[in-house]
Image 1 (spheres, rainbow, N blue to C red):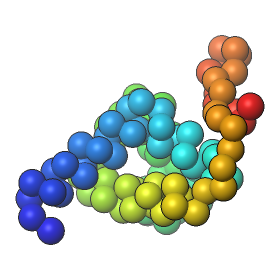
Image 2: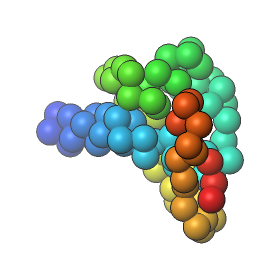
Image 3: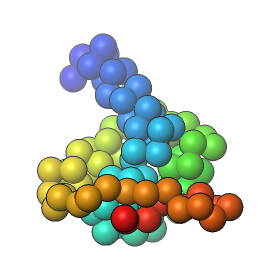
Length: 95
């Protein structure tokens, strides 16, 4: 993979995480945060901070995380949408 493509993919996964889309993809697929964290050898608390936009995904984990998200999107069954709850925690939930 050339450097330009690699950097574009890193930017893409960071954008998905920052916007909340990465978390929405995971939730829609019914995959637990701890399962994704284990798959990419990352602490669950770190992945949580990445998913809520508190911390950017590091280059070390970005491509593996993106590969998982892409696979979840491919296998995802259609859902109506993901809604943000009105609770202070601002958790996402299926509508």
